[in-house]
Image (cartoon, rainbow, N blue to C red; front, side, top):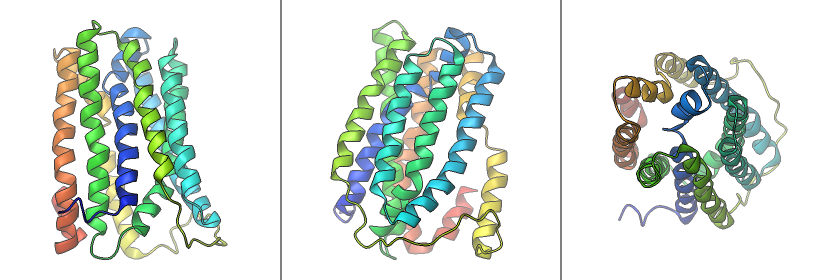
Length: 279
């Protein structure tokens, strides 16, 4: 019943995210190991790559989100963003030195920055005041399902090909093509008009509730270590590469099955109470 009530646009966006995340998460659990063991990069380089990648993604989300609003267009940003992420998979697979991985991760996060604002706007436009939580929760579930299937596929490929990490990197490009295919079915917003917006780096005009939310998220994020370091730590504690991937799968399995019900629940009791439970 819940699935039937979700708009087709949201389902299609969910399928795009599913396949893109399958590709990304085939790479993610093995990436720090690929960097440190295959390319002989120092652990500090892993942190630099992740820090720059995620930081640039955050900046690009603001810039391209604003640009999407100004043009009144969404789909072009979504398509270009996912295309960039698909190209990034190829760059990483071809890497013979760690700076290539740095470039690949930057292109991937650039793509995420380009598409995220426009994609979330499409999700919001498909929602009404009674199902916003459900729609965003469903999309997060599809996204996280990719984070379950991707590592599982990588796990079985590692077993089948004697832990050939580079082969996994090449094969990860295939699900990205499926993600690009489902973009054909995404429809642009019908009634978006061009807006005369200017980028402002001041918080002065932001609502006070939003300022408080940003501050809370920033503080929480400072203490939230990147998963790549948890992956390296798990291996240092003696877990094999296969067990590291399975542990990552279990983490995302819980995320996948909790997101949609939690989103629907937030529509009933209010998102603020859900946030308190999260923190």
